[in-house]
Image (cartoon, rainbow, N blue to C red):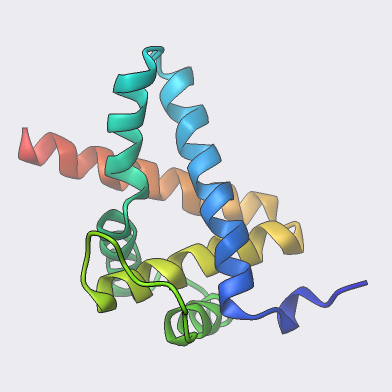
Length: 134
């Protein structure tokens, strides 16, 4: 059996990317959104590297992450990636990789309650920002 705590930050981010996007898609559909084009556009506000970097920054400001989660974030953020950011700067991309690493870590450890707590917080935070910008 693989020790999740020993997985690389990029491996954790690979899983976390899919898990976070799945939660966001579920949220949007269950909120009544059903048109694929609109769903894709709305999901981008939650899952873009810029949005994820903003979320992890906000989490850090209020000390939302445990010490262990902070370590996983740093491991993901500092991992040497061989892909480059498409529509953002390198630091934003790295922060989003760290964000995804935390989500992947919690998922693979089976920390469902904590994962859902953070997912709910993220979805609420993006919604609050959207309301302020409207």
